Image (cartoon, rainbow, N blue to C red):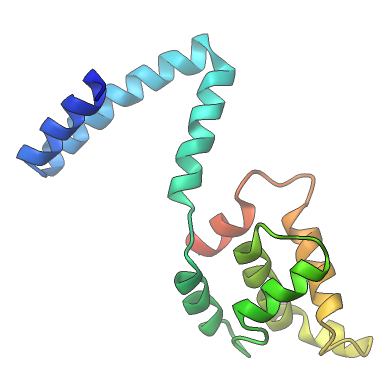
Length: 149
């Protein structure tokens, strides 16, 4: 066990108060600010790893989000989306596609209907793919959208 992990375990196992958490976070913030100024690439790589944890969405949570979408809720369940993605050779980011395809159905149904694509999974896949892979987007765009809304 590293010295850092040992100290973190001691700090958090003894007292789970906000005071200790805030003091620890302040020390880490100072360290990361120095890292940002002196080793930008390492800082960005580290922040990306933290974002992976912060914006992690389980299948269960994604299903809850989709069930609450207005006005239609879920059009395609997770397994249907996952299986469809496999036909496209896509085996990762299934949760993002599940969220974005169902969002597209809920938000752009009238547009899809106007071009007779209202039930076309391919149409919503293309919308989702464009949303997910937007060249202007920052990492974790889809997950941030749903977790911060």
